[in-house]
Length: 302
Ligand SMILES: NC(=O)c1ccc[n+]([C@@H]2O[C@H](COP(=O)([O-])OP(=O)(O)OC[C@H]3O[C@@H](n4cnc5c(N)ncnc54)[C@H](OP(=O)(O)O)[C@@H]3O)[C@@H](O)[C@H]2O)c1
Image (tube, rainbow, N blue to C red):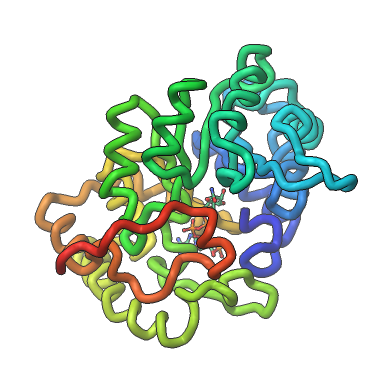
């Protein structure tokens, strides 16, 4: 996502270099969406994987929204457009990016199930669905994966959603595992950075949340690794698939090395004690976007 000017400017040549470096490291799972740069991200990924497509698992996502003539975008139209931009004849995993307020999830995943049966997509996924929506969707079309935000400062899914994916045998893909950079000590530096309208990146929230981030920094110092690596090692310890984003080869290599870090039980507890779920200052999205993600369960008792 960050390769399409969402968190500040991205350099096209460095983006391609980073994607190629990822393939060279042995990374096979790439995540994009129709929404990222309005098609730019899928086209960029399509160019980067040309000639190396076969061993890769490509995931993309769509929302119904409206087309130029005010009609609801069907899953079929979205998949056809994604296939063109990705320059491939098959997308391994295709998600409903957000459950539509006007279209029942059963209808959306039913359309995707049809496309899977036709071989245009491999698996059907949903993003930011509630436990009840997951159960309803899975009855109509068996789901391959749920993609939702999950990191030390966003642990709400642990209450109901993550256990539901486990009970139903649905994979869990953790997006923004570095807290959009915050847990790694990064934040917006440029004007056109979407994080500037996120409540968690307002000055007061940053001040409050930085205090608990110190625990990550302390652990990192003790283990001689970076805060980004500690944050990713924690997500990996939860048995889910993190999909960190970066625009640079340097951060890519650092993040990849987190695979080798195993946190012991005491360190995991230390980190979780610093980040009880539901206690992070600031909503994870602006108000309008909060309407289309599951309501957070009551905060954990500290
Ligand atoms: N389903 C959804 O609704 C949804 C929503 C958001 C994201 N996603 C997916 O999840 C992916 C990752 O999420 P994300 O990009 O929002 O958040 P993230 O992976 O938590 O954080 C990315 C940010 O962290 C910085 N960063 C990365 N590695 C770093 C390191 N080692 N040290 C310091 N800073 C580092 C990046 O900056 P640099 O570029 O400078 O490295 C970038 O600003 C996206 O690419 C997208 O595919 C899905």
